[in-house]
Image (cartoon, rainbow, N blue to C red; front, side, top):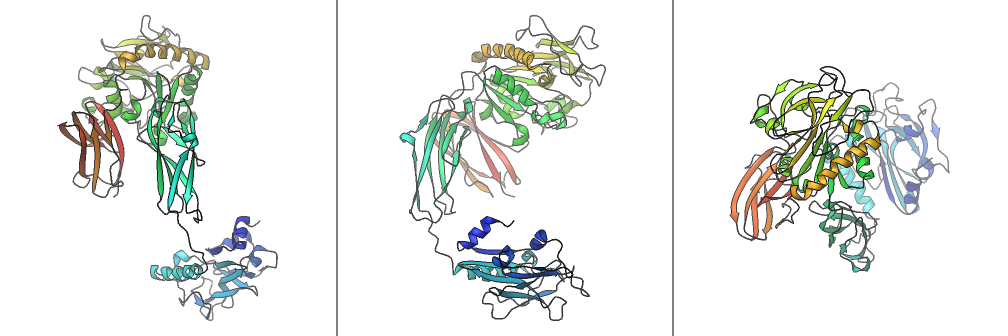
Length: 605
């Protein structure tokens, strides 16, 4: 069947320029010089393309030439084009269709030169069907000999069409209104309907594209103008609803909305950092999501795989607890500050990514869980750590002793350490008889053991796979097992419930990063950046200010401390060339009295 939308378009006066190889062959694959195709009234090719006969194709059906059509010769008096002959980027072009027209159509280009086997046939036909106008080119216009000739051909064709086109009336003004004149959403998961009015009323394309402009505030708007709040703590704040004319006139309008009441007093961010596709690894985090939903916790999800980045500090700081899940494989994790984990300097420079470090040091609670996140850095066990090492001082790990399966038997279960502050649930068992690649750890005196490998007869039962440390002002619960593979959803819910209940009890004392920012940072301009760009910000009070830039891997590539600055407006004028930044995506942060806000910057190569 033919495309009905194209037929309707032409019937309503549309101008249609069809060009390329093999579109007839796609519908009539058996056509050749020995089996031609005649088109009759009622067929699309006859009525809408002006074709009466499809004879064959160059190269396939041109006999002794057998190597394609060398050129197309202009049909004199066609009234549209002047280039003669039409040549190719190759010596000949293959698979150009050889056609004859209907009585109502007009020839534009003939296969050539004179003497060519298919010289009696044509490869460009023009048809006027009512008010509709159709040009059919059965050759590849992208392979005309020069760009100059391509430009000329397109210019002549489009100029011809332009004389029949009605004048375009651009959008000049957009007015946005909201239902009931509301400027706020205060209900969790609330909505607000928006409407647009376009002037002039006879604008050719009277439609807008709706979007949300925000600095890290989560909200969405449909193309029907329905704004929806996120239901998570990251959805609280002020956003701009934007309506932009779809006619490319550049006209747009914005409407400010304040969103509050999203999420609860205790909010959790689940970070999926598992890229392993084996056994559904990339979606296994949804088992954890199910537990959080079953337990009724307000939570958001950040997927490092789809985002190709770790969450920034602004995102993390919206939540009292971050569950960082590395899944069933620790390959190329966003957990680590990969720019510093270089061979020979792991112990000296190893750390989590910069925003996560800042979150924990500032009082955040992180529950790290999954397989192979230590293997991702150190490879196979055995490794001993000492004071001064990140693993020792920050994570509370004295030694990376072994992995289940790789260094002995599979791990049957975890046994809770009596008296630990977090939970009593025991034993933790798996959907398998035993779990592979769980890390057996020795812990430091400063850390607390939460789970031993078990049962007591297990080869590594003296070692830990769950420990609790307190780096900086924060709390880190590390489990070297994949909890998404617990034996039942019910048991997982019970265990998660115990752990999260404890975290909720310490969250008011642990988290100090939910204060309203005491400054405003504005998007850098211009963005994308060729060389010079400016970042403006306004301080509500005198403050210490630091400006940092991170590349897509999280590596800090620029830093400048401005010291103490007065309240009011300030501007950073920055040269990416002087800083040696290559093309790509960057995150910049402004740290003001230990509060951080971030933006994204694109540098053109």
